[in-house]
Image 1 (cartoon, rainbow, N blue to C red):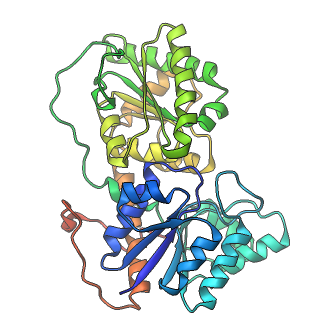
Image 2: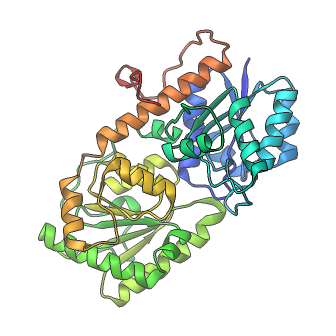
Image 3: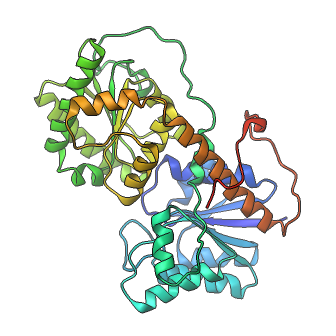
Length: 397
């Protein structure tokens, strides 16, 4: 039985990282999947997959028993040490050499590239791309960097595999229109009223936007514009810390500071813990009137929810996704931005479907590679009708 080791190098994890693993394991079945992450125990609980620690020695140890090593996501094709990732460019290159020396396949799926500041780093990145059995980058900007480093074009660009977990429509049970504000006696995050504002961010995102006070000023302006737009009772603001695991404390502390600053401005708010799954995040956001977020994974959930969306990007990945979704962005005047978001409501769904199709093509390519071109029986996804899946030729570049 073919076994693939999926390697996630991100130090800070959220629901989308788990979604990648569960989607890949489902779509690659009957190929066995082993996950390597920085938090193997939590990953095992959330996904049910066998796991190892994302460290060089634990990753190399199972090479005898796996047929392929596949880094999924992250930004390994860049110079310099990153606080966000456990492996440097040199580390990933060493793992690729060891994998190929053991007679196993090495692939890269959805990885990002960054500036390469030395000839040595450009050489390592170029060799990683050329010697990989399959290399799929995350977005066109990464492909341009690799071409500049000497990788022959065209370079394959794919979609985040977590899109495959967002195929079904949001779970929206019937609800009565509510006018009450969020308060401490209200239950969980799924109880946002249909006129509320949803804000999801990480600590780094809050800091990039000028800190809690600056974020609260902008959210208060958006909240006021939303109230005018809906002609409803004053909307509440649901402030969600995005990341789970070891980073959840930092994110919750940051959004609690934002909530406190909103309270000083007379804006009702409620702090929401990170979602356990990407479905849960999408379903919760779908119950609000408007979402503001700058994290790329939160943008994914919000765009799949189909609600009016305002992007507040603070990273290359979130800026690229905001451009693909063609949604209004902050900072800008609140009233026209809110108006533009409502005019674009639902227009993100074609982009979501295209991303799902592209992610499906990536998995199909990996399946063909790991099966040596043979036809593997497809096991239907639990609760999903695959007859409606869109995987048109030419979606992926």
